[in-house]
Image 1 (cartoon, one colour):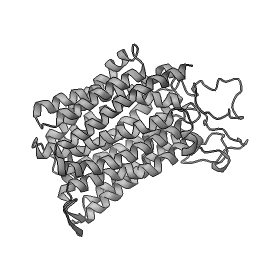
Image 2: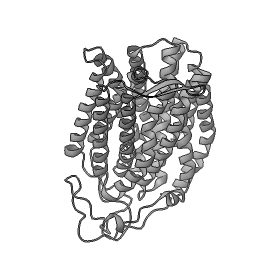
Image 3: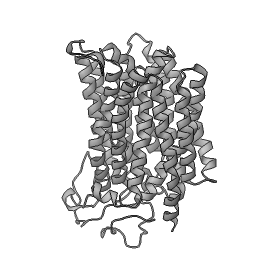
Image 4: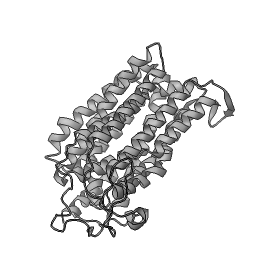
Length: 452
């Protein structure tokens, strides 16, 4: 594998092949379960968040702003957590991230019981009219804190790369995506059921708290540490003391281990180009994630139940594509080919949403599932291969930051664009993904360089 890598850790067994995954015999089931639980906790509030924001005095712009809090603070936290996972181990950082998610949902739950006291009135031609209220401010804090500790995706991806041989990465990243989409299937459906109980909006959020507790316990008792840390550095004979009750690997202290920054990451061949694609993909996605709920309410006249059904159908289709379909086509086609084809299908999905027709909206879901289901696991597989074994967590962390920056831009811009252009916001999202489609052809050359 090509790319900039650190020298072998002098504390490792010299007879061990450094390219062999340290934990290749580790079962993926606990990691997939953690990923499923994390997605379930998020998706359970997805169908009614836009209604909640409106009830607390917000508008389309505020909805985008609340949604952007997570990626905005993930932009700060993800690179740090990614580097920590390379040094201290994946499990400790997964646990830290999960605890942050748990606390954020508790804060979110508290916001539902606060009085709706106005803090600031805004009436702007650009931003529209809205009221910033006390519970809305607490929602902002809850989403920000979850983002700050939200390195679980990048760390989980690095963990998966640690325990998977290159030939199996596309397939296993597909399994990771399946576990994510299973959470999106059950979450919205569960939200619809819980929201009609006498507890109203509090029931789904309480469900997210319980789910987060389950995820924390699963990490503690069922997720093993995949192996020794990857970064090179002068290892000391003594271990760093326990963090969260688990012994850290013999990697020295934080001060003794060289932590690569963005400058070092950008020197890895092809990584800057990949990070640029990562940014554009997330930008297109997040324009959709903000605009679609607003579009569904204004044009399709959907409520929480209809929104939940749509996301459940969409996620079910994704599971089919990322399961049997991806498993079959990945044996015949390269990662780059699947990324190219998938991005073409994904861009077409956004164009089908523009008319606001019920039938075309569900046809678009098929294109979304086919595009995202083939493109994203293959794209993650390419990132892991290009990163090299030494900098998995660090590269994944910076990739999450680039995605976070795009998410901030896309979520805020999506609300503003929909206010001005309505369905035209989907045209812009489609053009962004079509641009990605054209840029993806260069990935074929990157694959050839890995085999050289």
